[in-house]
Amino acid sequence: MTLRSLLWRALALLSLALGLIGILLPVLPTVPFLLLAAWAAGKGWPALETWLLNHAHFGPHIRAWREHGAVPRRAKWLASLMMALSAAALTLTPLHLALKIGVPTLMLVVAIWLWRRPEN
Image (spheres, one colour):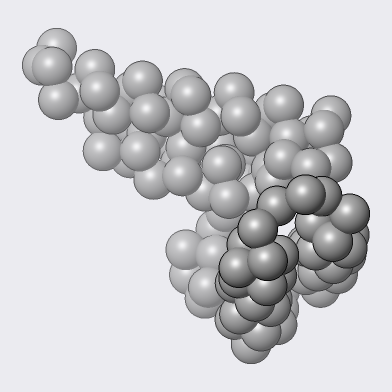
């Protein structure tokens, strides 16, 4: 096994672990990490990629993203809600004003992009 393959596997495992932690922690997104895990596994661990693609719960979402760039409506709502709550929480922090404006602006751009994605 090459160093390159080991690095792809490490990225796949790290992403998978973060995605699984995201199931328990609402502030950590699950799906982007699972998409990254499947992508990295495809580069260096085909068996893990196959397992993720055939997973009963996550597989359909990963395949929909790969085939159509589709995001489920429920995921759009949850992501938008979490971004809105995060933006609101930022207003209560002592952060610099530029961050209090910049971060929510970036989240708004992400939300607009997300809602423009097709749904599965």
